[in-house]
Figure: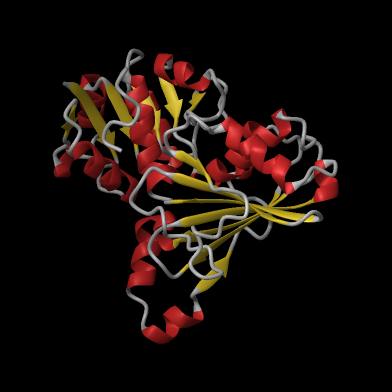
Length: 312
């Protein structure tokens, strides 16, 4: 049995990870005394006892836990504190052919952010295939359920009266282009220019769409068929990434792309829409699944030398 300590187990991501690990036959989760969960000595003891510690904390608290941990402790950090830190392995197994082995061998792994995963997995293969120049400025529009905002946002939405919930049904944010995901999106997608990123939170619990509009001239005139082929070839053997057939509308509900269709899973759907002049790349996944807790369990399995899909 592998001993796992979730520092921040009571938070949204911590609870989701705990649920997934409850049915994981190879995992024993170490539990902190609720009265002592913020005590640094108690946390240090649990960090030292774990084969892997998973940090589900705000960034500053995650850095504090790293300082509390012994040098030998392996850490999987679900915060954004270390995602572009060169001393940490970025935990997106589908990133390159070498990433899984790098995650398996790493002492420190940073779980990826929710929005960046869809952006990175759509953009990077096109740059590597030579269809998209890394110098092309990109735009990314994204939609998430309110669970991505953590406990305070969840409580805010769930306690709204009907009139307020209707008024605040859809809200864009990060409008000053200072969103904390931008460095991660730029670093690991391969683009040399930070995208214009417009995240939006909507009045539903969980589920996510990440969308990248492109003109064909930004792709050197590449057709939707060529773009789709590059994505389909890249992810043909990936257990969790599913590239929909070009022009296949069977995964839509009428004319609508439902952001919740992959909820409670670690799966991600990739789509290519458009015509010869304009294309739209889309990723659909659960912001609490593949976007957070599911990705953490996937990384944890790799770190422990277990089958990657176990518990997912």
